[in-house]
Image (cartoon, rainbow, N blue to C red; front, side):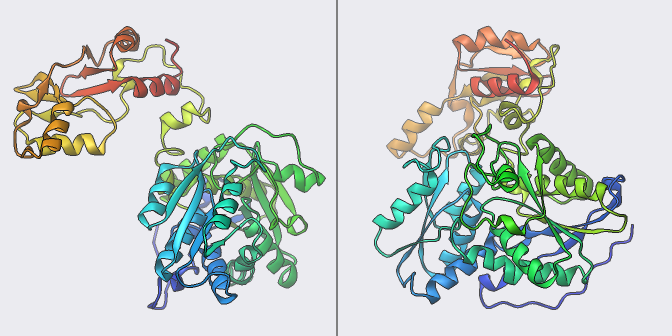
Length: 466
């Protein structure tokens, strides 16, 4: 396959917000799904500087708030968000010199929370179990915080008309130009509904022949509301972040949508995993949802139809969730692999060799313990297990101000917990972990640790029943 690079103007920007938009459109290989009769184009919104399509609305809403005097110098941006709008607002706030407070549900990926904190935002976690209208619901918490903090502007992406306007003025015309006026269908997920509302308004007014298809996860209320105009009974919670919902928001425009397709979260995640492995496009689970809906459309469309799909964000924000097999198994996304003959090696949470040499400096052990969540840390000398690193003694040394970094690890030993062989049957871990918080696993060429938390996650992943 010959790779051709599209010609681009050399872009120079005076401000990070000027770099929002004009994201690439990449063709999905026909081999991805030979039964799809349409040509599918992928709109890579994770190429925005803040990493998602929400950079578009964050910029537009914030600049409009400044222009209208709703946000003044020294003020605070407050928002309720599932993550990506928060990243966009945190980026814009940092760039323009405003404070930023974000209310985020407690089931959102750790990567998103870490990102907004890195951008200087304050994070308030709200219960993901709180129903709409409840004072503890993340939307209501954001509303209250904005009212309580002087000089605050609540972005309120759910009702803010500048949310869909960003897509009507930007994303829609951009797509049309990139497709060289050969576009038949646009597919996007529905979170607040702003993307669909803005795209729908643009295409309805300027190119009404383009059909707009919405993708909704099972358990969301949007598809039912679009079909019947009423809210259903609350469904099962889904784990595809950023799309679906338990209520219909003010920016949602039912009239612009031509079709709604409901996709299971398992299908969404299978699709996005295959997208990464087969094309090198590393996108988030909501991208898998939209692409799965687009493939359904493409199988039913006339040959040669042109379909554009919005891929909202990157898979790098879901390494601890959608791309983690233990997480998917624990949340019922993947069926367990049912391995009754599993060994202890199969329970290990990561590649082996999680240990430290006896003569390595204690600073090396500290780095390993700091960067990894797995404990204890085996200390190895002459191919033998000497013990595990004594974290309690290290804590005391740091509190006393002692020089500890260069001392060898064999001076920080404590007795190791029970040791089991990697090839032993997995069931042998159960009685040991009932009486000890962790054990050490001995392989042919490595030593590692297995604690209760990682064992429980592995049991769920493998479908094991202690």
